[in-house]
Length: 459
Ligand code: NAD
Image (cartoon, rainbow, N blue to C red; front, side):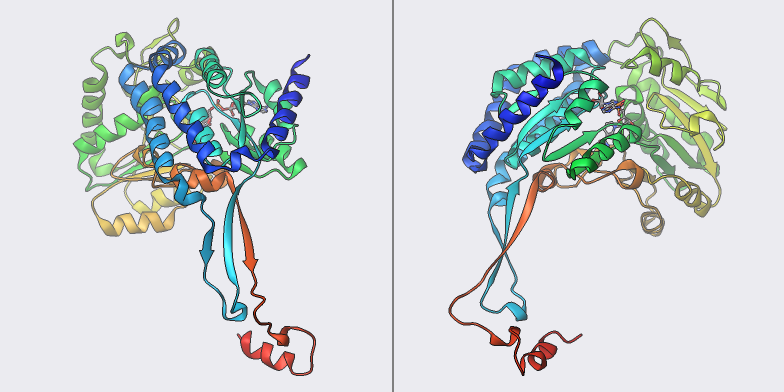
């Protein structure tokens, strides 16, 4: 059987399985999620090993950003699923007296999840948890650029679920394309804006609903009143975790010119305290995923003035945390999402100039603002559209299950995490349950019907 045929076979088996109705039982879903949790616990050290192999993720980073976050998502969803899955009664309009309005969350059917390489475990498994919680079957397509983690995902899925319920299909763009040609009922894609467009075009052919979790250049504003030492630590954490290969990493900094020098000196201090004097020999400092990305990032190293870092290790595909000062918007490093450990710094004197510069570009996935001034916070938050972000922190908004996580415009559409994952993978079926005890005749064609309706429906 060739790849296309075997994909088509999995899809039709999942279709048959879904129509058996087993996944509609919340008890079944909870049982499967608990089973998944048990298998993950049992395979935790394999996951850590695979992340080390593919991306040189240190154990602390792997645990917090890949494994712990998945445990939290699982526990939160297991705890709340029964409540979310219940049919919900809504208010009755005056025109509908006697009836009951109900919303029934129902699974779409077969969900396709396409994942990227940068958090190869979390970004495949977290949407899977949402898809299963909502009662769908699922096919996961992990990234071809992280073969150790992708192989492990396949093995864990095979160990936990039958393929007619959950399957993992490995491969690159060809396999992805073939999956996108299948009659799926929901597509959840995480990756680049460029491929997001391809996914949406494929989905449009079958009118399949999509969530697109994309990327872009996320700005980080450091205002003049910011507590600079703390801000620098939080920026360094957001920028250099996973060697900068984080979709919501602060891509570039806009620092008030009055505090730039002091901020840079704290940023250097944070980098040294996190990764030592020689990050290239720090065994827990991440590596760049591929030679192609390493070469792309290396080509930016001469942009502006290097104020810290800049050394590279071609054999290990590693680049030091690097601060690039005196950056201008027309430099190559500002033309595309960096996705690496390079931190370009631009300055501003008037905050409105910084806001205008951000608004001249596509809507970012994240925005970070460091200031304690609430007027400044309100002004920035009401002037710029972005997916999500933090005031006085970086990355942390994605780690709480209470906040929806997603982009807007070129950074994506739709959102997930916690209850938002459940709703993303559920269709809200609206049903009006009418009473037979009485009937308002005025809605039927009649002589005085219009007069009554005009009163009821008046502006
Ligand atoms: P990518 O778009 O190259 O690949 C993502 C997935 O799409 C992979 O599984 C890949 O095999 C598949 N793919 C690649 N080309 C394809 C094609 N032509 N047709 C169909 N499928 C195709 O992205 P990436 O390099 O793996 O990840 C980096 C990007 O993802 C960055 O832009 C980053 O910002 C973004 N990202 C976003 C989020 C988020 O949550 N919003 C999270 C992580 C990464």
